[in-house]
Image (cartoon, rainbow, N blue to C red; front, side, top):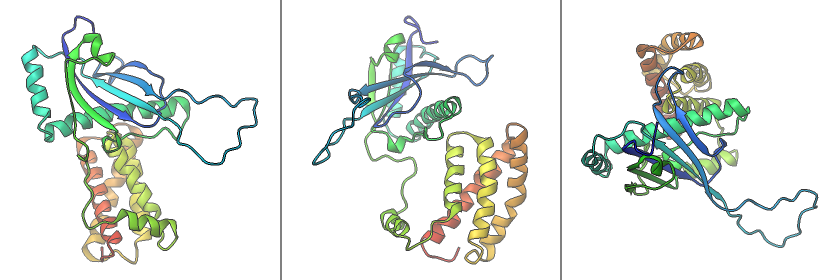
Length: 287
């Protein structure tokens, strides 16, 4: 628990220009009901006032649209284990300021906690449109440390904002998503079902939802092999067809409980191979 006299705590904070779904508040995140908290999750909404209710009215006639003010959703993920001393906190912050793998690791961990909350909210509210979040889409990403309840209230001893433009999954130079978007929306190019399914499997993997990823990967693989039947040739098709057995085993395991390490690795590798096949297809090559 984060307490007033509990020492100095590390946090990662992300802000988004849309509402998340769960109510503002402080939540303890555990792996199981018997385990101590892994993280403290603090959700707050900042910024724009609520739009005036139009209940009982017919609305308004307008000549032009003006942008509506939007709220900012703030997610703060706090490590419940305090630093042993102020010097250790300073050393940790100095390391993450280098914007290397340690920074990415801390941010990925926070995003997983946030998406676990989104998954819980989707189930609790039966709301399929409560979306996952991504550090790439955050308005700002902060890392820092502070004392006790102060961190939960947004007051820090020291914090650093990650520079914009640092992406977890950088766009490959040869791909042209804007041009392809125009082609897809204009029906000049078909949108494959397997593209959406592979993206969902990747989202589940990134969020740490391994059971869901295994089940998603199975249908994604079958869809990809069917839709690209005339395009997949040679070694790539053989490799993808060879993924059927381990992915099927992983999906069957997922129906009964958590995946073991071998099954998780098989799903991760297969999703990567499906992404590679689709990337070659998008670039117009021979997969």
